[in-house]
Image (cartoon, rainbow, N blue to C red; front, side, top):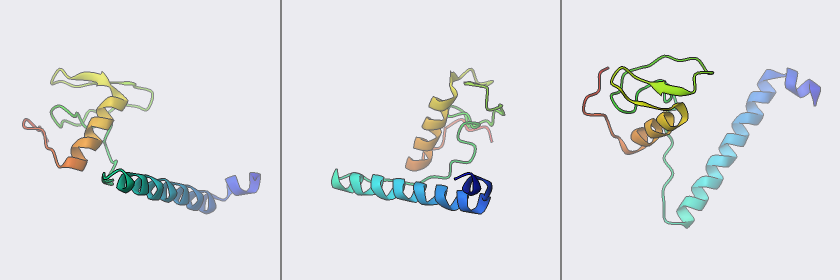
Length: 97
């Protein structure tokens, strides 16, 4: 087990397989329930303001998203809203970028 952790390519392949399995299982369950799974690019989902679209840089230990537009919310909730917005193709009306 210790040797596997040191082998970065192997660790990456195991992680990729785990994500693929999660996607396959989630897709199967969604189809069974008459729903759909949409994959989105997660890049900057916790950095972008889900209210105005402005990029608000923060460190990993910053747990609150606070934007100049006045929007203040938990970082994870902001990221979740951005993922939802990307899945449905929503763009904030007052997008700054």
